Amino acid sequence: METRNKKQKKWWHDAVTYEVYVPSFCDANGDGIGDLRGVTSKLEYLAQLGIDCIWLTPIMKSPFADCGYDVSDYCSINPVFGTMEDFDELLRKTHEQGMKLILDVVFGHTSDKHPWFQQAASSRQSPKHTYYVWKDPVNGGPPNNWYQGCMCGPAWTYVKEVDQYYYHAFVKDQPQLNWANPEVQEEIYRVIRFWLDKGIDGFRLDAINFLFCEDDFRDNPGEGRAQRRVVNLNQAGIHAIVQKMRSIADEYGDIMMVGEVYPGSTDEGRLYYGNSNNELTQAFNFTFLHTVKEYSTYKDEWGQLQQTADFHREEISLATKLMEMWRYNEQTFRALELWPTVVLGNHDQPRISSVLEGLGEETYRDRLDRIAPYAATGNTKELILCAAILIFSYILTLLDISNTPLMLGMILEDIMEQNFVTAAMSYDRNYSIFFTRPISAAILIITVVLLVGMMRLNKKIEALNAKQMENIAAGHAADDAAAAQQA
Image (cartoon, rainbow, N blue to C red):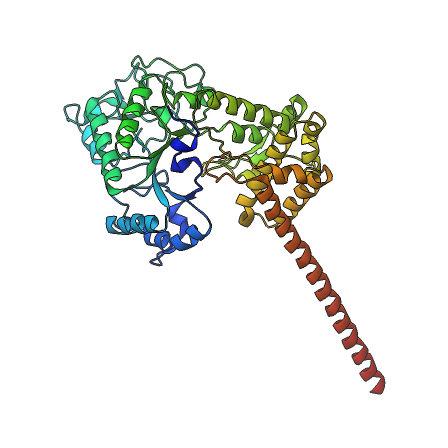
């Protein structure tokens, strides 16, 4: 069993992993779209930032109906991003810089443009027909009431050529693979080996808990957006598949296998580590992010304003809720000697900074006051931990918000007023907020002090410049007046 002792420490236990959305990261050939050579050109810069691992968003061949999460060829590179030679060079130079590289991939579905599906949809007699999940119509319509994972329509699409519906857990461009078919399993296991043979350091497995569905295809409870996915989410059959993926990865050494278990409570995520840590090395835990969003007023991924804050504020404070969740997260995973995660944002969610901005009309001083009761009860450790999370979230999004230094300054002042600086300076417990290097609160606060100091110095310089400009303007006015009198 894996433990946290230094003997069995894995590289990903304390690695800073940086998510690179390739299309917008860096354009090397001037066509307006980021590419692999663009990423390669920035490797030295990324290494200087202290990044240990690069997480590439999907780069495989795809019609891009869903940002590359609709793959039409698992063992290729999307020509928009470059060639396989470009990837090989990127991987080699990443390792030369002392960094790791993992690929983002979805194995639950392919693109409807994948040759497998093109053949599957052409005839029921096609050898590839059983590669996907097909059902006959029921009463002239879909076989059940399943709704898409993105909650934007039915999860079934009819194909006239075969007089059947195919299942897609997400949009219709992403037909679901039939993982009950051993041939499909072997196809994907070959894909995993293909990339590991190239020398990558792991995978980020997208929507891993949508991989399998029960055979009876009964209705889910509820309809439309209110539906609860009971039959086609987190099914028992997934675990044997993930165990096989892990066993393949373990043949290649210390490989990261982190899975997106969405929406994923702490308990749901824990199941994907396996009974003896023989499945995922880590599973995303979204409960912290969802909880912060529940206390906020913000725009969701569809641009709709979400307002649930008042109800939750009356129920329990955000700081109290986060601390309760943190303790439960720690206890749940430590007892089983597993490696926990905390997710504060990703490419599918509003930035944590935007969500925190929507916490209401209260000031940042008020937010820190919410945490103050922990001091009275002697829970200084919890207070510092929560403050560190907030501070570090702002540092992560520093370039995305113009007034971040001011926010950081307010948070720092609150901490200082509560006399927690001394405690924070000695707080040096190594713990990994997912994809962050274990950094002490002391380093965080020193960073903030420098930022605030620069901000205040800048304000003083601006004030001096403004005063100087006023004096110059006054001098010009006096000269003009004198010239007017002489005239």
